[in-house]
Length: 63
Image 1 (cartoon, rainbow, N blue to C red):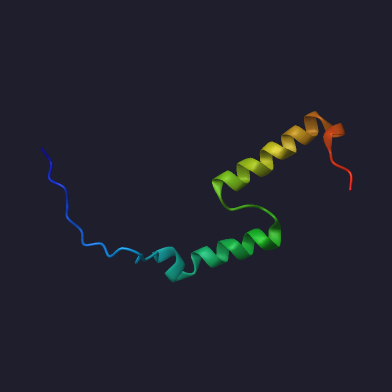
Image 2: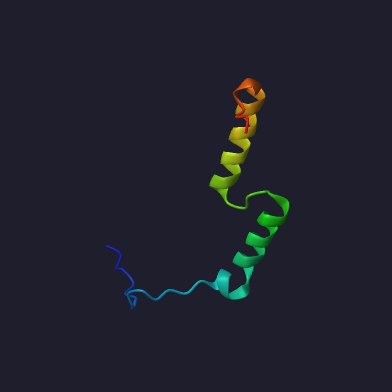
């Protein structure tokens, strides 16, 4: 049987190398400026809505 590697974790404390390097902030700024989501779920939502709007153009809400 494989043994598990023991790591010391402090509850409530975490470290993200992406946030430390500024990758997270750059992705957020890109998404805000272009309107293109950078997450998988956000992109799926946007594409799915566009496809549904093409199939049924009368379902758009009027303000």
